[in-house]
Image (cartoon, rainbow, N blue to C red; front, side, top):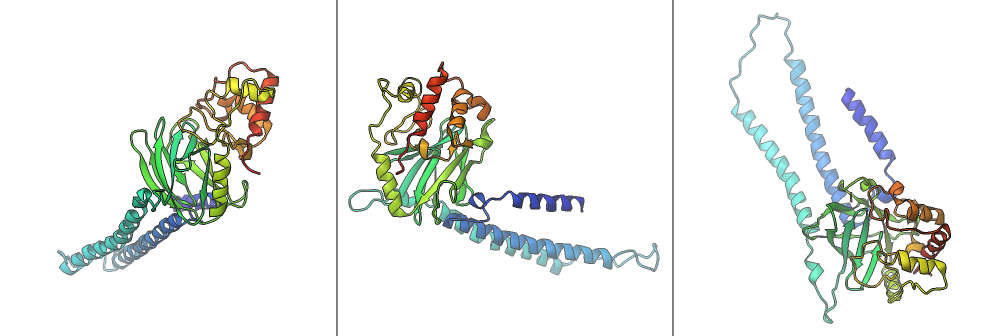
Length: 349
Ligand code: CUA
């Protein structure tokens, strides 16, 4: 009973911390719904088994307790019962089959990524594919067909399957968007593939954005390795693609009259790109959409003070990150200017 009440208390606490945008119990996509249904179905069967077994146990406990005839009475000895043995062998087999068949069907269905390679008459890929690279402690999203690269923000259209190639740049991570579905490991040595479907639109950056997590212990800042998922109606997604592609060739110039841009070009550009178009694999996150984000470094409030704190002392924000010690010697004035410049990077109207 102690264990039971502990579990009950834990359940209350855990259910209280489940927010809408990050709850597996409130799926916002076809994959998450299917996984939840399978979970509820299995739990129902397992609960029925627990109830029946507990009942039989209590029944035997009461019915065969010490009788009034005294301790020396020898009860009837039963050597075995073929009927009972057949019953308690066959029932579990049936239950396991009932659990196994829908589980296998779902597993194969959700692992089916054949559509990833399908092309239409013009030779264009018919399904949207995103290459995900997990890094200590941030996420890079590359849209190979569109030539776009983003960091920390996955932008996807609603109502269609989105296919993912998942890999890691350094150590093993795991890609998980709890309310959409998943999760899947990201490994260094191979590419894992799967798909998700996003069925609800994000309302704006603060509300209705879905949260993604790293689900594999990867280092001191594992718990801070979040990303955001913005889901757009298909035509809005097309607009977003166009505005990202319009940043082609955009870069910071060291000769700029703007102190922030010049400082960025001298001190940050070696690791951070400011155009959303181009190859992935830069050392640091692409900052093209930085001004449109709603967090600094994924965890701080989205304002200039947070950004200055992150630039000057990243270790206190995300222990073990690769930004630590990289910014060199910047004056207060330069830090303030470069923070202004980075906050001004935006593709949204
Ligand atoms: Cu990456 Cu945990």
